[in-house]
Length: 163
Length: 276
Picture 1 (cartoon, helix red, strand yellow):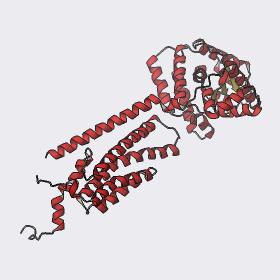
Picture 2: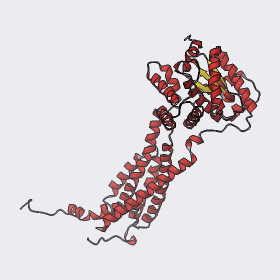
Picture 3: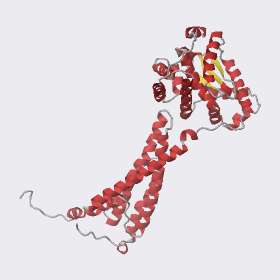
Picture 4: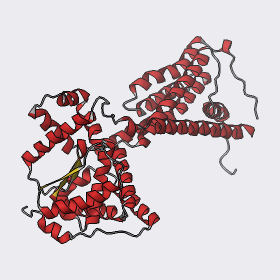
């Protein structure tokens, strides 16, 4: 495996640090906004990632990690809302399962906020912070495809296929 | 590549953490119990004599609206059935009174102070005295658990309840309480408790719990028929299927020999007014 050279905190510009922090910070804004429609913050984080993808790998990593982290929590937040709508249009009976899901979503959201804050503070200092699983996947996406991205950026002339 | 396997391990760790979180949520909800939480206990200051007073006020209000069935044959059958059930019940703080009202609605209600109201519409649906015992055992369960007072406390709030019981014999308050009670929906948990009580009581009184299942099944069948009025009773009793299943399972487990009532059911039905 190629040696991956990561930028050190002093090599990362203030702008990058702020953008990386913004990836998490923006989540909080859309998180509050997104509670009635939790998928809204998923879209917002996707746009943020697409915008910052090309600027710097440090920012791209944090944006993608934040985006990936958002997918399960958004699904989890949609579920009780869908259930609530079903309850309201059908028999108006709140089963215990609904409260279990609601509490589960609440606890998961608390964990989500805690980990997001941790990541946010590291990003501000110009540090890579790897969330369990999401950190690895995000890092893999940004750094493992480096060779392909380089090939795209600098096209190489090749003979026709099978020559 | 070890990176891939470590990613998977972290995914597993994450899923395990989520499972633990879900288990925690389940445990907490079980512990706090949303069904129980929505029920209010009747105020402890509510003395039995006041409850009896409320009961008689409600009874006169009911009788002002509907005619009671007083035929001797009906009285005798009810006394025999209720008597057998009460023999096997822990003593109640007040006498149980069953009032039959002449109305086509299919319903039976439990009121405060030991008053149980059965509509003739429901009696017409029953096929034997054992089924009547099943219906009355269920309502008796509500009476024993004081579910009507809990429903009142929930619907009206303690203030109105206490002002109504505090001697202000305002006709309007009684009417309001009556309306609330007739339309009251007991919680799912209260219905389940009354079912359990009824099945236990039927078994103790040497009656087959299967009768309870047959009554519920007939009501469900009727509710699918063209007559919308049947929906009323079914509507306030959700999860009918699981209740029927519960009664069937209970009957199968017990497998007891029944001691049927020595009563003439045809004569009982004939004694009921048929004017609807």
